[in-house]
Length: 94
Image (cartoon, rainbow, N blue to C red; front, side, top):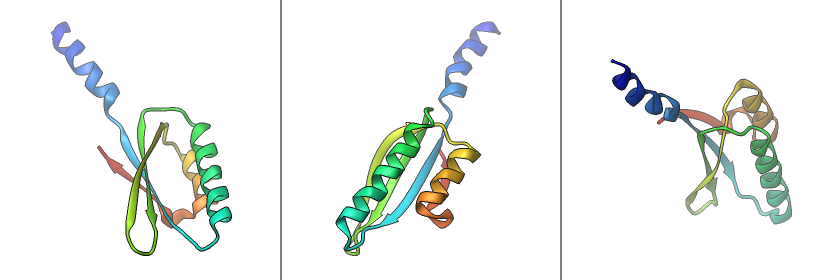
């Protein structure tokens, strides 16, 4: 029984969510870069194991960029919403 619990424990720890952030590229390259820096800085403040994916709509295609992991929580959600807007954030199970 203990052996089974030990086997299951790592899977439980590894269970995570995927945070998906969608942004649209604009004609303001400097503004877009500043926007992405804010996004990175916000994510850095919340270390954790949840995957983070950035979807960038360039107008011609959608690029998907894997970001550093973060610890998703209500505070991170609120701070990201201030940067990218509530509608740009979604959370998926992995």
